[in-house]
Length: 240
Ligand SMILES: NC(=O)c1ccc[n+]([C@@H]2O[C@H](COP(=O)([O-])OP(=O)(O)OC[C@H]3O[C@@H](n4cnc5c(N)ncnc54)[C@H](OP(=O)(O)O)[C@@H]3O)[C@@H](O)[C@H]2O)c1
Image (cartoon, rainbow, N blue to C red; front, side):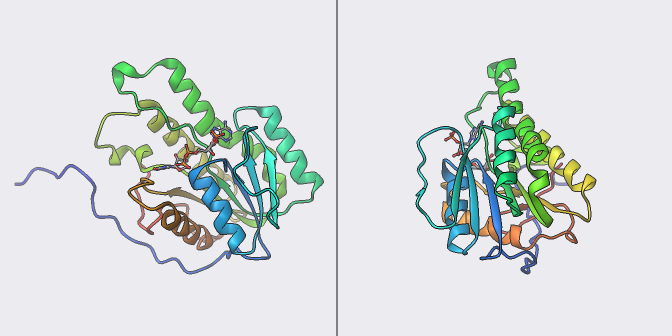
């Protein structure tokens, strides 16, 4: 008998009918928009006519702050007070968030066993996993009925999809994030639609195409769709 194959299996692809469109009636909150996927999400959601609330760490914004429908709020997901302020801003502006996307991440974590430090693991866990919980705790009161919550994870955080040993801290923090997303999905079943997303390896996958695919997955999610882990190209990833 042939030995089991190592490497990417063929994944099933889902149909993605539009169930929760992003359009001029939508308010999209995107957390972590200073660079790459987050920034492109802002651009494409604005192009769809949505009102966008973009959060960035206190840094020079690369977004066009004069863009119609764009509100930029400074927020650091590792700083509880900063996220509390974000919640207060949303409340004071009576935001009713129809789509929330969590995209903040610390990715520069390439260590294997000998190169992984406790500090690196803690930093990663705080930013990539705990940060999501802090955000949820402080913005949940501003979510619209039947809002969609999209959490950007990574295939590197799927145990069965691990073919090379590096990025211990990043992988482990992401699997914790995946579990927190599932916890929210279970606790708020019937109230919010929750999904996990993988943008693919940006560079290999063009950024615009990846984000376009992520938005299709988000728009095909509602309270009746099952929690799932879906790639930019509609492939379903095993999250274990
Ligand atoms: N890029 C890929 O190939 C790839 C592959 C698979 C999965 N993903 C996932 O896709 C998502 C987006 O990745 P990306 O490529 O856009 O990553 P990125 O280029 O490293 O950008 C990360 C974003 O998170 C922000 N951020 C970092 N720490 C933050 C904090 N403490 N509070 C608030 N925001 C913070 C960064 O802002 P600053 O500029 O201020 O640091 C930046 O805007 C992540 O969840 C990542 O794991 C990416």
